[in-house]
Length: 257
Ligand SMILES: C[S@@+](CC[C@H](N)C(=O)[O-])C[C@H]1O[C@@H](n2cnc3c(N)ncnc32)[C@H](O)[C@@H]1O
Image (cartoon, rainbow, N blue to C red; front, side, top):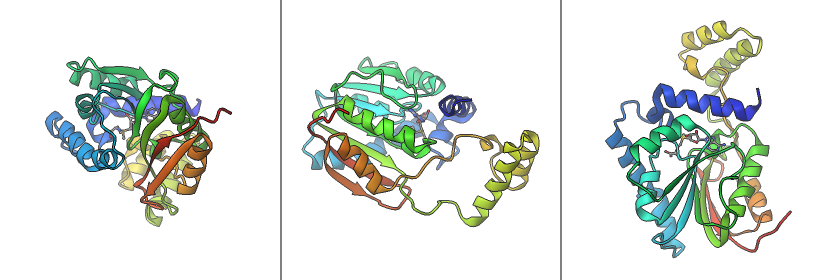
């Protein structure tokens, strides 16, 4: 199975099992109200200060949200911006988002192919945002393509804000890595049942065995190199070498390759 098909299958499965939890895994007892309020809180905490600093006024502007999930932050984006292109690889996630956000005619739902923003018109976005998505991508090649696509989608002068994992050291301790190493080895050997049983015995989530869940880390220097080579300017990087790294900047003169 192609890695992109596996990504889509896994996110669809997570949506069916417990969409709110797999999107925002810091809580298990989400109800819809708390879930969408957490999206508003994240907008106030993570997005608004950056936009204000960049003198960016969202009213009348178009934005793209990559990895919208069940619409946790899409709702507040649809209130703040004139138009939102809400993109996700999982139609199961998007189905839930559409149900919750059916009163927002200014959201266009786009099913992603996993690496490009092919449904988004070139130079159509004033703002591109992504949170808790790039950290799950299974390869640097896919991340590279997606990052370049962001610059394609942005108007010159448009702004982006992206979260990614730039932890140099694995976020799991040695015990976690050893346990997952054993479980993954059983899975790779074709022993699916044994792998799930071993995961349960080791207090790991058996549903996560063999999944595309553990994504890549990207060095901040690499993010900078990729984005700048695609035409990004005024890059600002925070949280370097941590799982919660951020990169913001502006789309400058386009460099077509
Ligand atoms: C952890 S959730 C975060 C959702 C949302 N950003 C939030 O903060 O509520 C990750 C979402 O990204 C989507 N996703 C994963 N890989 C993707 C890709 N390559 N392209 C588009 N969406 C992707 C998943 O389907 C899932 O809905």
